[in-house]
Length: 302
Ligand SMILES: [Fe+2]
Image (cartoon, rainbow, N blue to C red; front, side, top):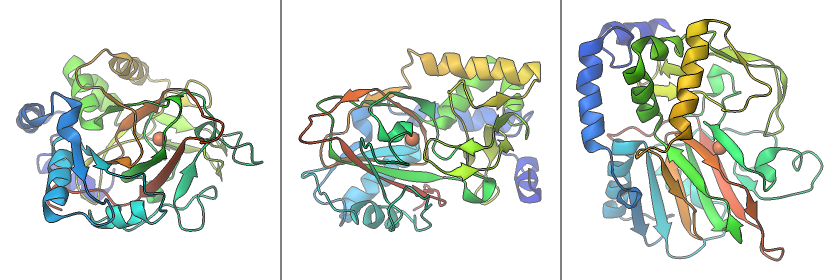
């Protein structure tokens, strides 16, 4: 933890292990505001590239409650500029470029047999387990927010489950505060050196699952439910915490929302937990999702 984060923790962060009063106060507000139904997070918009003030405010309110919102545009908008133009309205400007993203930093997530891309799960029709994006990134490239814009859905499947990572934190800490603390250990989770799901060759990355963001004081989560190519700390508390988290994500839970994005719809979020079911494509019209990942987070005040 950096000095700045440590300062925030001392100042009464709800995420500081042991500060039960700050945690209780934050938790009560969070759960009271949390939407019971997914459609409370869906905002119809005329054009995601040019939000009206009311549309912007409705999306910002949803994100303040649940770290995520879904905009529902009226047309598919096969426009690579769309995610960038939308994200910019929420203060997101620092795009993460990985080598499979196209030159503009926007990834076209679609089934492909291209050498280099087709061997990585996002570019297949296989299911993807629970994760946050960029869990293999170094701290300097922490993914704090992202946009997934649907141009074309699959013929069947391709549903996303979504869970606000702050709710995941609450469910673990309510089980046992020691488990939440264990997931904040700096050696909790190691992703071994390898070529990752997005095709990026990289060194091993060791770090916490839950961390207080030094820039903002927000809770950040770094997680994958994959069981291969991941090393959990040998600490029994970390192992128990990882199992607790897996149980939370297995559901059923009133906090886990499921959505199949339709053409023109998209997810704007603070890198919440998500998965993807497998899918079947219409051979003539393959599922196409534009994905933009940002180092910036969406702050409630934006
Ligand atoms: Fe993802």
